[in-house]
Structures are given as structure tokens and as C-alpha cells.
Length: 410
Image 1: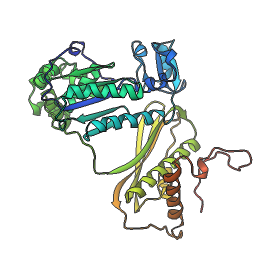
Image 2: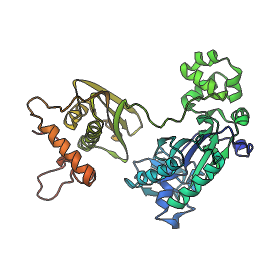
Image 3: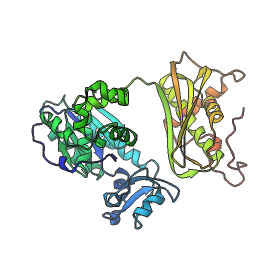
Image 4: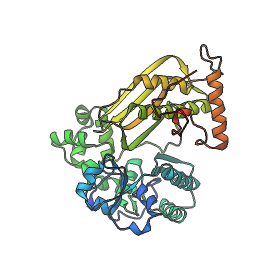
């Protein structure tokens, strides 16, 4: 969901000539909320948010809730202050990604040039379609998504990715906004400065201190003047303000890292809980390394605390690995538990190199790798949730497992 400021004046027709606008930005409207409403239609029209408990954060808010100022990433307690009648629906693991995957297949059926940027948004380049116009493709996509998944999608159509993304935000809810190529300059001029891609609160404050409050102000500067104020980001912003954005829709990138991170709407308050999640993430990373034939030299963890302060720590190993055992051992050594609890934890492996074959560990005779590869085979055949490390299984009566911090044993 885009939370940047909107310009009311740009919510209008800019013309019908879509001949120079091959870029579509598809953005699902209040995605998590809409998915949950499929099972709760009686709540439609009420202020609703998907998120955690009193200590959690808002993941998605209905438009009725947004009228009170409720937005994603807002603490639940603050959201309820703004909207006392707010209805909170707990998140459902796996539900949103399943719907997202089916929607992305609909998009890829329209064009192979699809760049998914999050669970609920993607860029499309439809220039390969010689039979339909971008406007026709957008209408067809929205109809197919609505028919197949019963959720709304808004689409921006433009000559560049930057303008298409802004257009989709102004098409919400459940609409389409075309910005013809020849209207790009006028469209940008009517935007609030904070709507520009990359202009967050800190950058906006710096621009305002320099007396820059509009896109027109940016255009009045020389490129090097803005770079002296913002560094390289200043040059990028100057280009965007002038409608210059040559970035293509990228369908694949050379893999430079593999990672898994999770946000928790209810804080993790003990080190044991966090360590268990890191063990799960280490197995996810290791499985993906083996599937792609990579080894990793560096392990990085990312920790966000209750106040949204984020810390990353990394360690480069003497020898690359593709084993969860080693990834977890390093990740665990990097963890410093925040006193306020953990809102997000992530494990990422970097410095990828091609694997030359099997990887035994000193004193292990390859047993760890054999065991982890056996797990890979079982998960691939029967599903990833069927087999878990023993320390990730919930405690059962008589099991001997007390839920304490995961330890790696021979």
C-alpha cells in the first residue's frame, strides 16, 4: 500500500492517448483487508484493520479506517486512539501470499515482462502486445483479478515506472489512471513533493529547510545544485522531476543474496523465541542455497525492536557454507536481544559463490549435509510444513522438549 501524500487535482482525466505508455503499475487495494473480508462480508463498510494485538502494528487498513488517519505500520494502540471503533482482524499466515501468487500468474499471462515488487504490487511492460492497447490490458487485468480472486486492483498507466506508480496511488480505490506521455510534465507539476519516489519524511524536511516545497522548485534548480544538497539521490530526484526515468521492468536479477525475514504483530519477548525463528530462517536460506547450487560466505541478521529501531549485524566465515547448522550458529552469535522485544527478525546469506560439489564439515563426515538434503527431498515431495527441525516443533506432553532455546547437537 502506498502511503505517500496524494494530490487531489491529479485525480482526473489527463487524456486518452496511451500510445506511448507501455508501463503498468498494478497495486492491490487494502490487500490484506480485502482478503480477510472474503470470509467476513458483513464487516464491509466498517473501519477495519489487519494486524496484531495491543503491542502489535497495523498491516493493512480499510479505506473507512484510513479516514481516521489509520495506516499500515502504525502501532495498534495509536490506531485505536484515532479510531475507537476500529475492528482488528488477526493476520493469517500463508493466506495473502497464496492469493498474491495467483494474481501474479494472471499478470504473467498478459505479458512475460512482470516485475513483482511486493506481495500486492507489480510493474508490467505491455509493449510486446500488438493487439491490445495498455488501457485495454489494464481493464482486462482488473476484470480477471476481480473474477478470480474477488479483490480490487488499481492500475496506473504511464511512460515510466515512476509515473505509473504515482498514477496507481491516485487511481485508488479500485480505479485506473492513465497519464499520457505528453502529459507527464504537467502531471508531475501538480504533485505534492512528498509524492515523488524516494522523498520520505527526512528528505522532505531537508528540502523544505532549503526552501524547496514543490516539484516546480526542484525543476528550477540545476542538477548539480540538488546533488550538493542530497548527494547522488539529488540527481535521481532531479531526473524524476523532469520525467526522466529510463529504468526498465526487470523480470530477473542476478542473485546476490538469499534471505528470510518476518514481522511479528505481537512482539517476541524472549531470546528463545527469537532463536527458534532464526533457526527456521537458517533452514530456509540453506535449502534455497542448495537448490540453486550456491555457497554463502557471509551471514547477516536484521533485528527491529518495539520502537522500530533496526539493527543489522554481519559476519564473514572463513569457509563458505550451504548448511543451516552453520548459518544458524553464526546468526545466533550475532544476536543481541533488544530489551523492549523484537518486532522483526531476519537472516540473510550473502557473498554467494558457486558450489563445486558436496560440502562436508570437519569431524562430521558429511552427515549434516546428508541429513539436510534428505529434508529438502521430503519437503519438495510432501510440502515444506511436513518436516521441521525438532526444536521448532511445539512441545507435547512427555516429549522432553520444554520450549527452551534451540541448541545444535551432534
